[in-house]
Image (cartoon, rainbow, N blue to C red; front, side, top):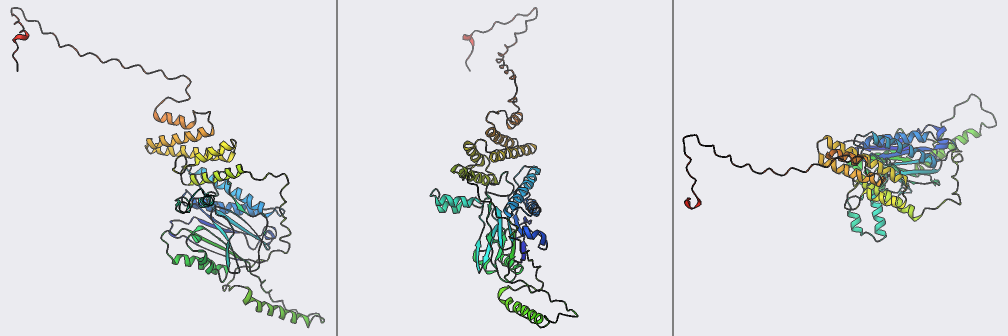
Length: 484
């Protein structure tokens, strides 16, 4: 199955482009034979710092890691390894930010290998299948709205409350988390059919065009369709239009006609009558089938790719789960739900406070269920570093009140990590900021001396003794003083 690629982007009403897309080399037939053709979309999180750098770094790292796939390695494992490498790179970028703020990006990748599709997605960028005029979403969005809908289904929340929640679009999983718990991917190959199209896009597309509006533009060649989608979107002139990226991979039914054979001076006599007839039949069949099987193509069509016939044979089926593999428990499901909620709270900067709970509260619940759960402890360590850095920034800016608040929050986080260490780093910094003694001092500071009692008022000076030769007049008694 050969592939027709197409792509288009627009910055929308944003100040910078934080979307990124990536294709593997569609002419590298040696790699295509075992790794197929990879396309991906990454959407840097605009609410976080360095969203544009995060998307570019994630796309480049993911693509490079996937190209390192070994011929005998199956595609789902190669995609998961590439995600791990991209996540490590983005986490390292996060640590390089002075404010220790979160850095993140969505990432959705699709691989066409022969007549099979494999995908992996983290966040809310989407992968659609367009087949016989119907558009179907294949990936699952990772946002707080999905959790709200689950609560609605369980009767714990009203539909109106879920629809009006201001945080419903907050991501619950993305590249840049200490541990990515929610990953949407397929293990078994998804079969593709002739004339299938795959559409990868950021939320800047489906967030502003309806499902039907997107479907209406999927005609012509993949490149023409991608351009039409962006044009229709921009014609609506949304004042808050987000960055938008569209990537399409088409799988036409017909193989392009072969190039004409070179003329030879002499041909074998036996085949002289057969070859011209056979060649004419092939060409005629190709031209007759073309209007019905291929979408209209531009004047200069993209390069076509025909994978080696053994492409699927070289991608081994993943082994069946072992009989003793433990199935997920209710505790595992609860921890995954809490980790997702904590990620949403962290993105919304509800670290230790918030009307609807906060990230610290969720991590405390996780550690109560599983005290040595490393992903939660890693996330808490990162949160403490973030709060300490914010406290230092506030201190440098002269805002002592804000610095004390952040240090108090960091102290709560560090105390959750180690309840026995009440004299943690945050508490020491807070004590120093307040000018108090360090909590870790072995010898307590001497008690302050009580203030001395107030001195009595001094008596009026005694009268100067009279000089010699003069008599002092007698003082009048009370009975002789006239009233005023």
